[in-house]
Length: 115
Image 1 (cartoon, one colour):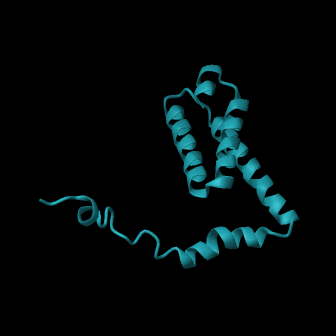
Image 2 (cartoon, one colour):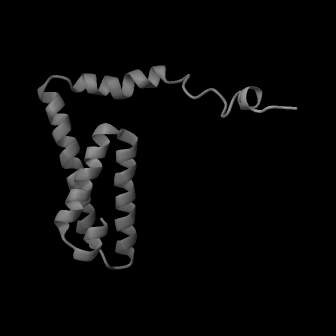
């Protein structure tokens, strides 16, 4: 995105969206938030009249092309349901007990020497 700001080539916007899509393939929340950050940044640039609405579509197109290719690949391998189950269904039922320990529990008891 920073290189695009200097050169203003739509291919760079497409590449930024594609890289956000690649991030989504590994880290779903972070990749989606990266896409939203790029779109908000471009929307703010548009408000200053320096960016066209087509730049938003270039980033979104790059993102959707990578995510779409990944979904088509899993569909072709008959594993689309397994992908959905492993990333949405199973974690929603089993991650409830994660991070229920208070921050720094035991730090005073184990590491603070009281004289």
